[in-house]
Image (cartoon, rainbow, N blue to C red; front, side, top):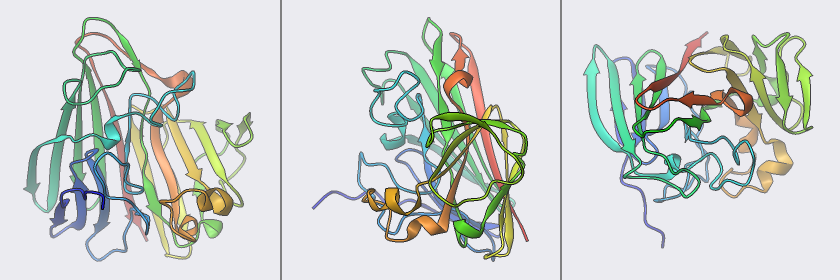
Length: 277
């Protein structure tokens, strides 16, 4: 029988509920007080050391997917399955601020021969705000791709829309082509799109009767993903019919928007989601 991860840090304040795992510094649950869950977690998620957790907000770093040139493993980098150090967890007026840290001495890869320090600060309150800070502790520049890969709960993705992307160019990874969005984004099949924008976007969910407003800082891309039925059936840690109940809306710096970090410098990416009725 596989080992299980240690229990997550449970969050219950006057403003929200949630949980945070030390593996991957991953927030897996969050909801404002009295609200329905905002972060999806698969019904067949694996909570095992060294395995990615399907749901919440995984940290993709220092490459996105298989990397810009392809062939890099594991997909989305190595820190999301690494054990981070929880530095602090402090509550301030109903908002819990959880800080995790990891360096090249704790997690690295043959594909990543660089010295680095990462910090993930999660603020769980009326809103959820995550800030990933990359610091180059070596003596040469490096180029990093990154994403805060949020899985958002929706009542039915087929009835949901995503506003705020009208007129934005994007790379359609399913079709392998460049496109320009016209109007709200609707969902009628597999979606994997990397939009070039840093503006806020809004998930409009008529089934749950709410809007999820996503905003970012330090991100040049919004990534939108849902596997749809056929691809979801091929993935063992996505439960049957789970695909209808989530939409990934990520803040990212990917492909040509990868970030160069000079020695001694830092770069931060912030992802924020709030619930509107």
